[in-house]
Amino acid sequence: MRTKSHPDKETKVAVIGAGIVGLMTALEIQRTGRQVVVIDPGEPGGRQAASYGNAGWISTSNIMPLSVPGLWRDVIGYLLDKSGPFVIRWAYLPRLLPWLIRFVWAGRNWKKVNDCAKVRFELCRHSAEDHKNVAAEAGVGHLIEQKGQLYIYRDKSQFLAAASGWDMRRRFGIKVTELGKDDLRKLEPNISARYTCGVLLDDGCHCTDVKAYCEAIAELIRKRGGKFIRARATGFQISDGRLRAVKIGEASIECEQAVVTAGIGSKELAAAAGDRVSLESERGYHVMIADGGRTATRPIMPADGKIGITPMRQGLRIAGQIELASFKAAPDWRRADILHQFASRVFEAPFESDKVIDRWMGHRPATPDGLPCIGPTRSCGGLFYGFGHGGSGLAQAPATAKLLAALVAGQRPRLDVSPMSVRRF
Ligand SMILES: Cc1cc2nc3c(=O)[nH]c(=O)nc-3n(C[C@H](O)[C@H](O)[C@H](O)COP(=O)(O)OP(=O)(O)OC[C@H]3O[C@@H](n4cnc5c(N)ncnc54)[C@H](O)[C@@H]3O)c2cc1C
Image (cartoon, rainbow, N blue to C red; front, side, top):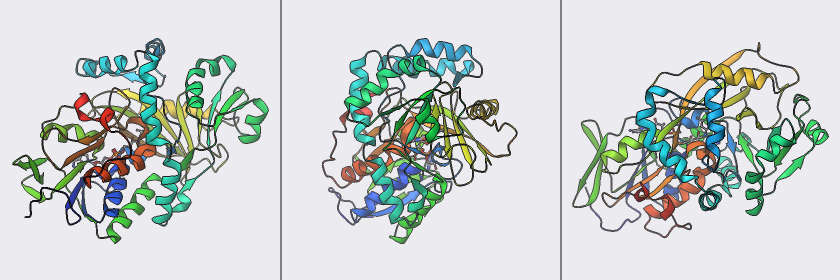
């Protein structure tokens, strides 16, 4: 095994995790001429990954963190409503408390939110273009559709309650188009008349089959000489302050550098490297129904339900819910039923009786401050982190990948990564 003090193009880089973040990262690292080996016990973008079941929204405007001043008032309301979009399994509360305190603290004033939004903006502003380019390169350009994203409101007061978020987006130069009842109807004729106004974000895209997209990227990586190993990474061999190998149980994979992009699994890996990170699963669900294309033609979010409704290749996907519970706990399929019932009432012709073709639960890997963890580990040279993208990992994956590829190559990344450092925990 060769040991180098400076990363060069012969360096073998292990990428741990084959969700959208790991795959994009492996692809970007390959562009710098390095060899990559991707380690994951599951298939690329398989059911085990959050990337499999998300709503497919590629938002160039997803700048707002979840924690904002006053959020607590809404959360109390949600917690009292058993069919609401947010739930905590109370038995988990003692373990969750440190994360929750950090979460509330992170959004304590609008200055904090604005600072966070600045970084989030940089992570998502080019995501539509970047995804379109990667999808075309992987031969699946048709999987990315640009029809914008539509937020709908029952009435003006509901819209005004969200106005600070839209104002902030405008200040960042994001195009926000307000729509009245007639405009809404023209755009999406099947929406229930109960929704009277909306906002269209023209620049947003969506992916109509994230699993197929992940598979295509994996295939591209293979074609370019990358390897995939079906195994769970369990730790690291570190000596003289440098990474030497990634452990997979009793065996190990020698490498000079490694990137941890293992979604919610990154917490354990960071601990194995000696880093404590504040990362919890915001568990989410989806339901897919065979709607025959008679509902939405573009991604829609009804503000009262906080759910993403996305037309996909196989049918209509209804994704959402934030359930704070251990990532090992069994799914509570009542959460998926809530999504189904709610979405059905968003349209003129309810579809509660339509065939459900898939139900899924997955883990948004969430930090309390709304920023991912991107940068070098504290523990040794050659090991980097790229996880914690919460509910925005599809959108933030291309920018994350470019930042990590630069760090791995020993170059200065185009964005200051210090706000995303593991040191903040
Ligand atoms: C219901 C829902 C809706 C969402 N909607 C959107 C959306 O519309 N737009 C958006 O941008 N984001 C959305 N998200 C968030 C997005 O899905 C995630 O942020 C993103 O998928 C995270 O990608 P990842 O690659 O970091 O993690 P994952 O996709 O979870 O992939 C991690 C991979 O690491 C592997 N792994 C774990 N531990 C190990 C280990 N020890 N060794 C090796 N491999 C390991 C896993 O097997 C997995 O394949 C949504 C999430 C949910 C749950």
